[in-house]
Image (cartoon, rainbow, N blue to C red; front, side, top):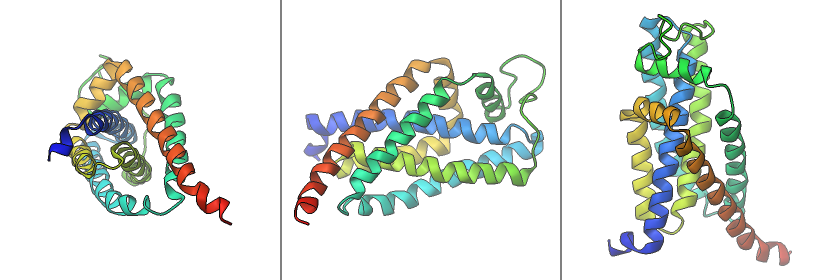
Length: 218
């Protein structure tokens, strides 16, 4: 237990908390945006399905990813995948905030932009279309989250477990609050982006060192 409070473990813990915060908010925005085009009576059902699916997928990916990253070469591949995650986040952070406003309105069922309609500017869609969009986004973003947490936790299994439990809890309990927080305080998302970029670079570096003896021995 004392290992949990070592300087290295505490640094990893802070990284994991920030990663969870940013990616949970990002996932919530995507879910809200997909549900925003639905009628009010269907919107809440789609959001609940999306949040439950995200939580379940995180648990499933956590069980697989922590084992897969032990395979030589997959740590490097995971780092490269996280670079793609950083690029996606960067593009999303620089996009028009109007879409995010519609997502926040759908999540909170409140008229954030005071136009008299909740999520009224989002393109209309069917429940099947929204559910499919949410499931595809959940698969991608849950894998991103688990990879980032596993990469940040490194050789600290207690931090890894805490990070994965926190990730599931944030999606299940506080997705709407986090999405609102990130929209109002954009700097938090940028700090999270820098941390994920650092984790990606570290995974690539460690993965390359791990792979080098095998390549040299061929």
